[in-house]
Length: 276
Image (tube, rainbow, N blue to C red; front, side, top):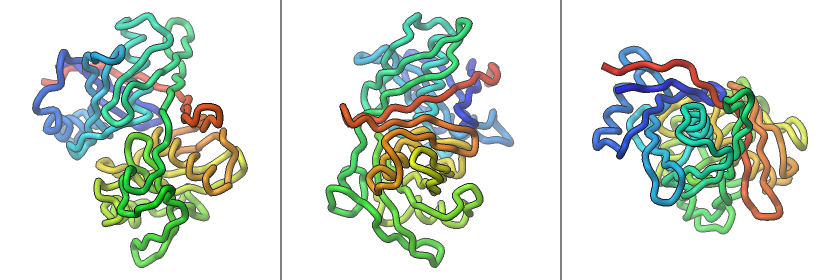
């Protein structure tokens, strides 16, 4: 199998093309994403045909679970299809199972994609829809206990579930202590991605993430979007801000005009190879 290794701000993926999704994609993800015995990655991404969009993206976490959506992966897919001349469009659509058909706009420099602006859709705020076990229109500043500590969280879905928690120092926060416990907390029936955030100004937020099915990663695009939405709901930031992740910055905007969240950031090709 031919593959391309890519990353979005260090959140790395094995990207493959296929006429259809293989039945053993979950098992492939576990084997290929292993950093000692495989290629090594946070996830395995398949680019397959779509009846509704230019392309469809299916993504499997390193533990074999399928993710509904991934903001860094969709930027990688957009770069892949353009740089490999599967399309000549600079505005195209990519289908995901969690967020449906998503428009993307490519910023091309010297014939290659430099950055990608993705329409991430409208945030889902209803507690049961995210899903959480909390029946509320907005799950804002709710208590949660983990590691013997009570914290406050806001829940948002960007096609996949997120739990945003504000801490004094996100950059040095102990992800390994609290991340696994919150990911699998009974409040989240489908598990959850956990973002620990520190607001530095009205337009700058530091965030570190524990991803569902992958653990700590250097970046999470949907998590950055969820963090901005939670910050706006809590009155902490403006509707447009830079979200700093371990791997770099993403520009996030929650548009007041159409209620949609827009994410802009880079994607990179690292190497190509063949899985034997």
